[in-house]
Image (cartoon, rainbow, N blue to C red; front, side, top):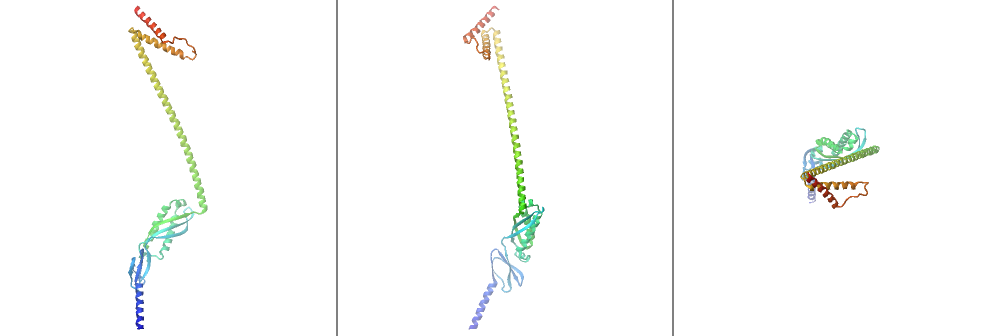
Length: 305
């Protein structure tokens, strides 16, 4: 009986070992390669699967999710002999677990060296100012070069970002002085342009003011000439009417004419500066009387004719 129990225990242990070695669980986001006697045979997808115990074994465990690779800082010399320190991050994803497992050894280390080499090549072909101002262009060039180089490994490089480009301290100080001088120069130019534009605006304003003033004077002269012309026409018409009336023997016309001239003469005498005291018949009855006397004289002359 003791011998049978031992055999049963051995069989149970053997069965447990078979289950543990033959049943494999692949987590989501990973692919496992299966090797039979050291040779690749197939790829295990995520989930529970079975392999032949003692014949098949798990070869490589590939992470199929997008991964981030830190690129350590390194010194780069630009085309104008400026030394800078730069680092980066690389985002990649394994798309073919077989090639990523058997086409390259130590994939992260290989990719890190590949990215560092291309950073030195791309940045070394640029001048310092171009290097500092074209970060997007640098990232795009690196992505194209590294993605093309990693394609045989079954890896897709999705993004490369240069995190920092640090020139030496003395170069940073020189750049700061240069930037300060350029900004002061720009400020001086802008100030001079502002003064010039202000002077132009003032001159244009004065010119426009003089033009408007001259146009106003011209318009006033035209209006005044027009008024004098119309006044002269009115006087001429009045003179013609009075002359016609006189020729027809109407005494009221000559009364009006004489009275009008009389009033004008009084206004001229009264407006003289040296005439402080003027003795004249200001009552209207006197004026009418004078005019009536003249009219009666005019009638008498007409009767004698």
